[in-house]
Image 1 (tube, rainbow, N blue to C red):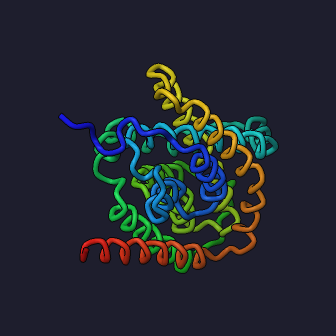
Image 2 (image 1 turned 60 degrees about the horizontal axis):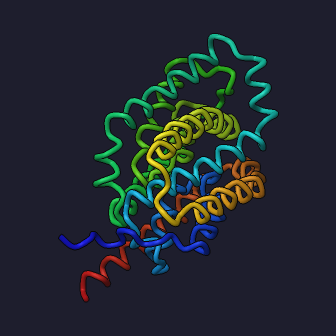
Length: 276
């Protein structure tokens, strides 16, 4: 039986670094980092797009590990404040926002990887997420502060993170939309989105990193993986100002418009490829 396309191919060092640089800002903005890591190589015709899916998934885990480490460093003040003020309400917020994506990820990880990582499904995720973000930002009543978040809010944020397991939806965008629909002001919605996302990013990176460590890296990829992690770490640290930009800009409309334009580019490419 012939090998599958991309099987055994090496991960180009230059592409690993480029994707690491891309991952930091894409994770901090509501535009879907996983969607960009898949779509940019496909649109640009990089060798990465033809690699074995398991290798690409392992590399994406490595990129998330670099981003998670950088966020723990960059947001150490917020993390320390949250730890000092950790009480029953905050514990409820963390647990109920963590459980839905954790359960969904455990039960549906393989089906999601097999069926929802194609350019077409990522474009669908981008469009769906854009619509929800735009609607939530426009109709969200506002007036609530992050300190008022209760168990219903935590569950809504958790369900939003579970929906974001579909590539293209965006964890950041989904939680921002959920918080706005629950009536939180835009600045407080941003803070809640950030606070519930960090445990998921760190937890998923640790779990999947442990699995990868048990299996071992594919031969010849260690340098590229290390470079990707380093680039992701550095680009995340260098891009933390984007957190403030999202809060200052407040409206989610520009991000929804960008996501829609990217989805349109993907659909156009798919249509052209179909006609060949």
